Image (cartoon, rainbow, N blue to C red):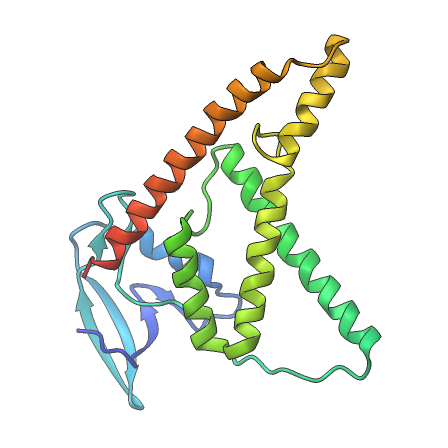
Length: 216
């Protein structure tokens, strides 16, 4: 079977070293492998190539297949020091814009019920991802993780969902349209329902994340 330091070179007929091959495309390929059928993989183990037959694991919650391996980009990240504070600020702004754009794209996919690369996780899954990013990239990875989480929270907070700041704006707009502000009791009742739904969603995601921690 696969070992911790094995480097995957090929999965079935998918060449992982082909130009333009992305992590998301690799993950999608693995997910759509035939269930309970062996797949041939080519690995590099300590400089020697081996071909193994592996039966994918089926995720009972999604029906997707997985190989029990972590797929990472076949690149090495190089960090360069900015020449001045203005260059650093420009790079930071560009990075934030890129992350925000990716999050908006994911949010659109969720709202339109389209397929989303990756999965939605709860607090436990978020902490696990932060730990993995910190282990891989150190303090820079930890800083990136905090920026990403804060951008996610900011984006969610402006959604027109009762109980969030975006919900307060939606109530104000509704009051303008109706010609009178909504009474406090109505707003509190609507907010209570949505807060309960959010708590139930978080509980479900947390249960899923905790269950995955104990899966082989």
